[in-house]
Amino acid sequence: DAKTTQPTSMDCAEGRAANLPCNHSTISGNEYVYWYRQIHSQGPQYIIHGLKNNETNEMASLIITEDRKSSTLILPHATLRDTAVYYCIVRGLLIQGAQKLVFGQGTRLTINP
Amino acid sequence: EAQVTQNPRYLITVTGKKLTVTCSQNMNHEYMSWYRQDPGLGLRQIYYSMNVEVTDKGDVPEGYKVSRKEKRNFPLILESPSPNQTSLYFCASRPTGGGRREQYFGPGTRLTVT
Image 1: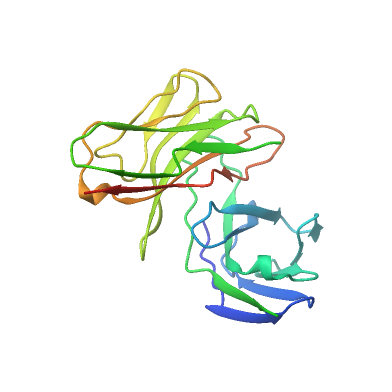
Image 2 (image 1 turned 135 degrees about the vertical axis):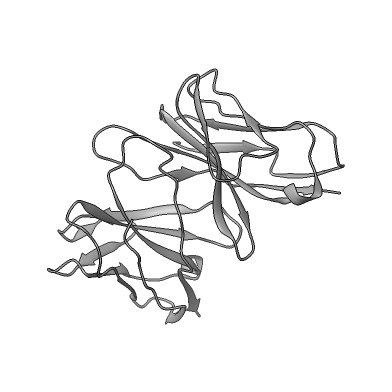
């Protein structure tokens, strides 16, 4: 799996859009970008994933640059409940094997009232 | 509601007393996995299962056992718990078809072994 780099921490005001960047310059052509988050001591939560097109779901939007070397997760209207550690992961569509998730340090996002 | 459930959520036990942490998912997922999470060490995979009766070791299997007799259940067994197994445990499942590979996690079980 390609290595990712994220800022250690970010702050955002409640109600504003939170934009979380991720660099993955060594991504290969068949690797997807996944985003998860973990609210303090709760189970990690899947947010969104994409290959090269921008993606949107009920939780967030994912913008992937044309060269695929970086991406941005957008929470359009952040709430206090979005305070969490956000993890960007790059991996291929593994079918067999351990398929374990390995989280890096992630970005600690704090939403302020 | 689609979910992964774990029980118990909190457990304090003593060294050597066998315990089982249950995990169940209602999404008909074939793949299931157990992780432990410790400060500074991130998520570490204990065991995983690709399907019923198919299990395999992850990165830290020592001191743990699992079984997969039914598709929905994947219990984690500690035959003789020790203090170094004090941790936060997560069960996860994921679909294997349709090009989807995201994992869904349970709420966690906080285990303390004294």
